[in-house]
Image (cartoon, rainbow over all chains, first blue to last red):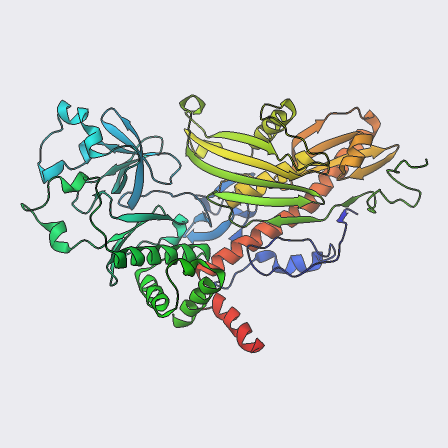
Length: 316
Length: 260
């Protein structure tokens, strides 16, 4: 019989971050019982190579494959079933784009008539010159002269917010920024979280009462910035022609800077505890942290962040 | 015999007190490591390996893109402090490059690379401690890190080293045993029982091979159980954390109340 050499177990690791030891090789019987791995929500969990159903009765969706007339999971995650379609949603993965999604990205390359954008997806996204707005909102075809000054619009390393417009044949996504809400980002800070934690919301532009704006990109990139007044943003004729592609930050006062870092740290804490982000949750968390002693950076200490998460759990 | 260490003594025990077919204690840590998409730290006895997976992502070098599937890029790095005597190995070391390419060819048929054309999956392996079974730890760690990154795979890949001392088979060898005993590393896929890799650097008697091969296959299934348990544990904690706005964390709260 093959077994593990057993050392005395040091301590029980209950947290998910902790390592996993084989304690007692004779727990085979117990394994049989929790074989279904039903979690508290009643949804079933899978691991790669677990057979789910027969392929004759069901259709295979994402995260599964068919072998020997069996539908088999290929990722670790939760099973979702719609009528005859069985899909497995991976618990952690890169961003899977869908048309209409709002994403935050960073320019990685300037190519003829297009930019390459890193958007946390399996390939860099493409932003065509034809799908950006010209400064001043002029409506016309892009000319050769525009092609030559593409770096005046976006340069390598610039951050932008855009919408997924379409897909190419190989699955790469095409973005567009043809709205006044989209375009270059400034006056703020970027935080990255696992994409699964950003749910589809009514609006992904959130203005917190503390004078901080948030853009929750569905790709898990989150932009936290100084609040921009509606009037400045929406103005038609009066709107700043150069401002859209400006690289220079506005003046940000000390209070706003602190608020921005506070919000970023809250997002980091929630992400490290794997809690999905919503606007109400963020506002609650902000209110809670303001009541606490200490500055924005003290939030990242383990005690305080655990306390934050616990307080949120009780409030909802 | 004298001062020489016995590989298998008369009582049937090995130099570290194990029986013939006993595997070393394993620990698996699937916690997030830095910015990696998936990572795993696996320990087989005193051998410890950290694997970080990045991707699928845009290939950094255009020459490496494959138009109809993802490219798997494996880099192995052996820490200078990982062995008994401190030794800095250069990145171009042939043995290390070979481990990397072995792992790459083991995982290419298992990972469903065709789903990600023109992308690249980077696997960075850091060997933190070595005490035999380096390749086995690297393969098991890579399986776990890939699963953790949500990269679709046909099955787990579980690897075990086996060896023969005179006529008796041994499993999961330490460095001491590896130096003395002919050994073979077998990686298998537990669902189908298919073999993903068999590699041998020493000479082994052909009549002994079958027994070792069969034993290593069985040991792979035992390892699979442990790896599966770790993956499921990690998945269910993450799922609970996401849906916890009510049940999951409240339970923790109740426990605290009881303590008070």
